[in-house]
Length: 405
Image (cartoon, rainbow, N blue to C red; front, side, top):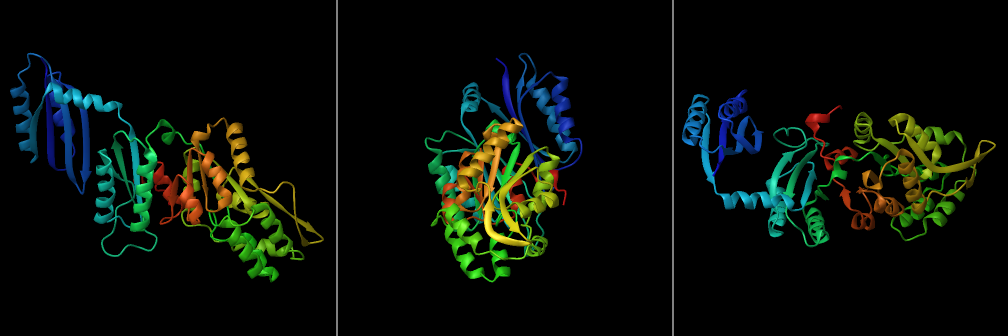
């Protein structure tokens, strides 16, 4: 019977370690059943699960590896693996796989301990842990610092919603974001990202800014807030707010657009998505004028919003065409996906208000971004601690691979 041995190598990282060890194994036609390598702060850990061919002098091979590691100043450990143990490991391939992602300004040991404790209590095994964010400076974190750690987890969950719910509760207690996703093929094949505009792509509600210029700021802001909390029907409240803008000079739109604050991370996110071949869209309950302004500024592919009626250089207090409410956003998302030949499981939708919930619910990945409580509670994922480019971490994209800022 062939002999199975686990080889663990550890020590200071240097070029040629894996090449040297695997070269010795290659000289004896050894089969590599599994391999993993990690480097943390120039410290190497290399593991190889190997099958020695029948009739091979395993002791000779292991001695050669031992001498080579000694020459390179590395520690090595050999562990025989029984047939039963190996078969048990193989059987684990059929178990469900999951991704748990931590997002914060700075990840602490308390965060890791709390999340891994939940994983342990659900009897899940952690196969791999990766830092997706860049290297962290010592001392106080910069104001806009980013930190993300991804856990690849294996094991069967009777009810994934319980696991997700506990992680979300923990995120609230720790003031971080914790995302849970099934590790499916769709996670790696997202092709379309649709954004809400107000308080998502921009850190403002455009209608509130227009209302301030028209001298009706408080009245409109009150209606806006109640609508975003889901207390008012969006379409009725929207028409009521627009009516208060009657008589506003058209020139105000240009000045408001030029002063709109772009949300942290939006430009980096969209430029990265474009490099990766994603399609992007703005689906907004706001106004087309400002959506098109952002389209040009960020390079967005599609824009759907409301057309603000203007006559004789002044806002009439009405909108033309169908109001883009929550249901209309979901319909438009389906239309764009169909036009591009993209499955809804490959779609990401991002928004903050109650009128975004319909499109968040049909997208393969729905993300509540700095959202109202009712939206965070009903969306699959939530990001509140980082900027929009934190979405890249949910896609498994690390800073060291895609940092183009």
